[in-house]
Amino acid sequence: MHVDRNEFHPLEVDRIREDFPIFAGDSPIAYLDSAASSQTARCVLEAMDGYYESYRSNIHRGIYHISEEATAAYEDARQKIARFISARRASQVVFTRNTTESINLVAHSWGNANIGRDDEILLTVMEHHSNLVPWQLLAERTGATLRFIEVTDEGLLQLDDLDQLLTERTKLVAITHVSNVLGTINPVWEITAAAHSVGATVLIDAAQSVPHLPVDAQALDCDFLAFSGHKMCGPTGVGVLYGKRELLEEMPPFLGGGSMIRAVQRERSTYADVPARFEAGTPAIAEAIGLGHAVDYLEKIGLDAVHAHEQQIIDYAHQKLSEIDGITIYGPKPRMKAGVITFNLEGIHPHDLAGVLDTTGVAVRAGHHCAQPLMQHYGVIATARASFYLYNTMEDVDRLYDGALKAQNLLARRQG
Ligand code: PLP
Figure 1 (tube, rainbow, N blue to C red):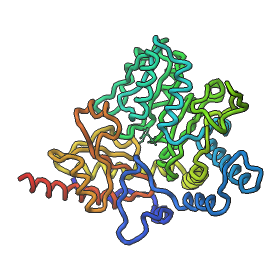
Figure 2: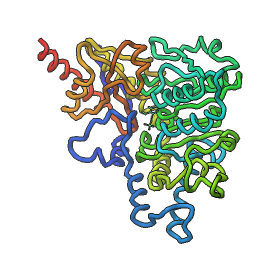
Figure 3: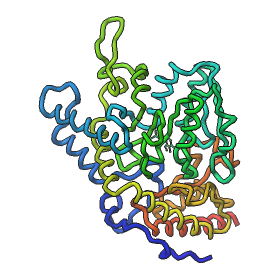
């Protein structure tokens, strides 16, 4: 079947691309790896430069005006992020390094205090290692048991089993909102409601949802939500943990040091209120300010518009790539997922495919995508993954398609 990309009506992205310096020039990269890390918007770079050039200083303690300016900018970023995810209060937003650190914070601080040897932690088979290994470590420390929601061959969660999996022993449910491999958008609201009905606490790994879809933490009613700045047009080195106020307030510190204390004596200390209690040491000040500007930028474009744009691209990518002989595409139909397409070409290792694509200026990821249990479910060691964002175009899909054909020609000839 011939697919005409003019049948699709992508958003006008030419102007958006001008906001990203990496796409300047005559032969821009087809960047299809935003699920790993997005590109950075110019306004974010300018905001960070502004801090370094004009008011660089430490925050919260300085009694001079540039420190007060830096403190205000850092706290302003917290306010913006709270509004972006519809948190009730800014103090429910804790700055961390990334999603991984946010989840580890919960596993140590909340987990050590609340999980015992008779308890169960419910995860899914499609978790990123960031939302698996911290719970394995917690289970090792406490003797708790890990249980898993299975994945169907179509790449959806097997929710028929949920009633059996959720019992009064389930103390925590930790699930990804959007799979970084399959793109599946999971019904996290329903799972959260079911988990709460047995008294379990819920953590949502929102690393792949907050950058791409409107996410309302209060409407989801989750207890914790974790995401990373570098996947949402922001800088590396800053992430977020959102938590319900009553949970955060009763949690002990994760890391100890400066900024997180109220008073320190030789033998013991008392701790600051949240969120400072969880932000030990000098934080990533410029990065937090940059993330606040990334949020401004995404809000201006609108997360509904970003999601709709990605849906159009992923529709087109599915149709176009399905034309290739010997392709296996993993995961659900385009309408049930975010802007990620994962596939293998028969007889070609995904690393070799990614290498050939790179020679044509197309950047995709190849490997296990930090989701080895999901790879085991599909019986593969690795896949190729193309992931899209607001600055991608239908031409990027065409370049992926042409590069895949080139890889088939080259590698088949070499093998033949
Ligand atoms: N969770 C998911 C679903 C992810 O896709 C990723 C990164 O790819 C992470 C967690 C970890 O994010 P980070 O490396 O920023 O901690």
